[in-house]
Image (cartoon, rainbow, N blue to C red; front, side, top):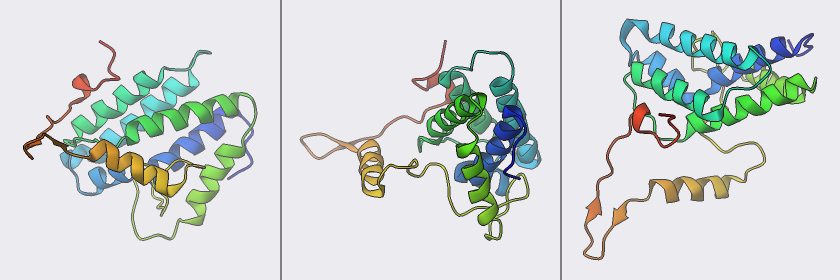
Length: 180
């Protein structure tokens, strides 16, 4: 469905498409990293996200959405360090802004790309599948630049003696975007 009647309808369809394409989320659910309740945890992340994005006039902060996602992944027993919670939060806020202005072009694009790839092999929490994933370059960002950014972020810290510093694993509460 790409003919939306309301901003909420377009936002919900976009959110479904984004969650279907979110590789880390799909893997955590498919592999049941959160046990038998993995699908329920993902659905709750979806419902809370939708509620935050559609209630009231002020949008949620990006940090609020990021913390929701990091907390959800913690319940899924998954340490996520690929930057996708930040990317997904930013994309959702952008879609929300456009939908409220009755510009459904990005929402249509997200839904159509999800429908186009519906025959891909992987299963999703919402029954669809996709080859395009989140945690990958954003629209308009060249692949080479995205790869450079990812390599720079993930590059080990090596001192002058050649010793590599092991970085501690982050939890949602330790994440720099957490609001305390």
